[in-house]
Length: 365
Length: 248
Image (cartoon, rainbow over all chains, first blue to last red; front, side):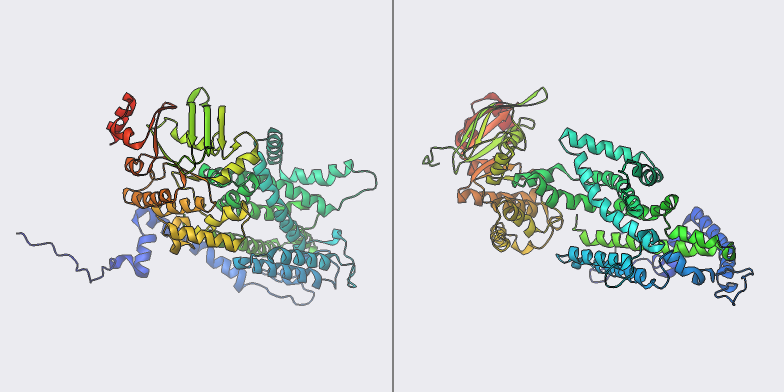
């Protein structure tokens, strides 16, 4: 009975069992794997069956896409016509009619810059200057005053450009400030350390709304007579200060994750503190905290809608204004779905960029 | 060892260090001449790693003096940075910079501390990578190399700074057994080049064949110090005999 166990010969490749491959294998493994998952799958299918067809009916089949002149739309379906009829106001608010091309051009420039930044090989010495020029051109387009462009006061900036401005400068301002605060909090100098701790804890202890209120209501009281600071700028500063405190704590987490040996290796080469941080510690720490940092930036982007409480007309507010028009009252679902899609696209771009960045910076450890 | 150089490159006099109340280093006196190779051994917790970490001020001593290449180590950060640039250090866990390529790991010090032009720094780096036989990996990242290869890169990284002294803190302790030899071979090669070396290690074979002097430390003190021949064949102290009987 000493029959040798037959083994596959070395040349013959072993294939995986049939049940694990292909569509059927996938379905079996992922959807009907045991009674619990089977129940969940069936339940989900039932819910989808109940929800999806009515939604499709409402959103597409019965929907009204455009309006016949003068009539107030009615019926069972979605009235998407609310979007094209009001899109100019929702997106650009009080920006003067006839000048609308300017914010459009500015937004297109911003999208181009983001697209350009997506390719990491572009992050060279031209990167900073190109962004600076881009931002300047956007500023000129929005404000005007030269090249024969009529001046548009910032109080007229509203809608999508306002949301983007507050977010973009919020991020660009808050990130370096947050990194500095994180370094300060780990400083050996007691004065700097306690200053940073107090700042971070204070800011994180209050809601953004209260900061916005302070910047718009209380802050002007301290200014000398006749001196005013632009309202948008004040909101912008509040957003930067707020976001920076959160970024600081995330970056501090990253700094703590760097092993002591990295500091020692850098120091034993004779690198001074500043270079050790810039060349060795921060590149690693900031890479570790890309996911939570992008999380903060995304929530900062969405939090800009809180500026409605100090009477700035961001994207959300212009939509609300549209909906308060008697003609469009009652179509908030459609308008908010449109808004949600717009926000989603922006947030999705940010998170996909973060994933790409992580992948590109991965160095095999 | 040639006694041509009257001034020792490292001179430690009556040096003490405490961690809280714990007396880690107790009255250390040590003179190292240019070109000398010293192996420091002893049980764990005896203070041998702390001793060599004091020499480039990764640890601070509290009494006595340490003079490296004519510069006394005080709290003056400029002095410390100068000494660190002169003294190369190889760690137990390599401590390569994982976000930089091997080549960038090597050129970082020369470019930023020594202000060497990039091209020249890269040439020097490639030369040392050739020397530790790892030049073909120059564009890889540390995470893609084996432990032995990483440690050889770490040695090359220190050499790029053209140090006067090399400190080794248990360079082979974290390696798989089959990789110990490739690192020791590189270190023996350095010894042949005449570089001043202080090596904390348990590799007694290396001590026998390479060291001019072997120091045995226990409980923060230098218990015995001798040339390798007498140290291994005729240890004087009971504690040394016990230690050697356990590890040989």
